[in-house]
Image (cartoon, rainbow, N blue to C red; front, side, top):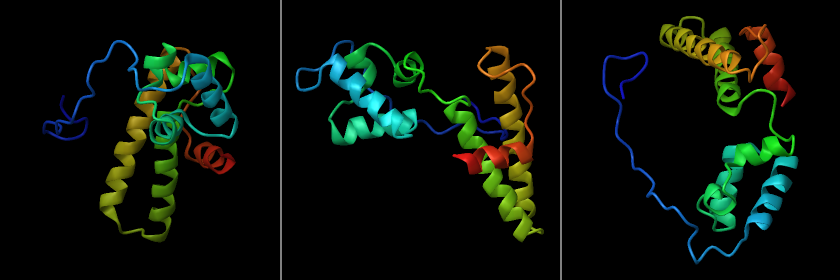
Length: 153
């Protein structure tokens, strides 16, 4: 897979082994893992943070193996999934931080370029979510609204 804004290939990474059934050493059952996910989601954790906690503290390598559903699907089923998807929210946070940096360092042209690329990525992802009806049809990226959203959380 090639990079979006560069003329080079991406670095290869490790792939997780394909396991179809839950392993015998996993102590938790389906309903216990779902209760843990719901509890952590109510505490305000994102789906990726919940996955890390399940892996590190509870010894559950993949929630989908045990429950049959992804963490985000379980959160959606219980109305605990945030209005803005996690990947888009992380990009918005990054853009807000970069704008704050550029207010202090006006001559940082490398960061200006990075902000342009980042905002184009946000717009592209926003179009995707509008098309798939995850975001409302009138959603548009606005740096001021993004700042308010990030401060809210």
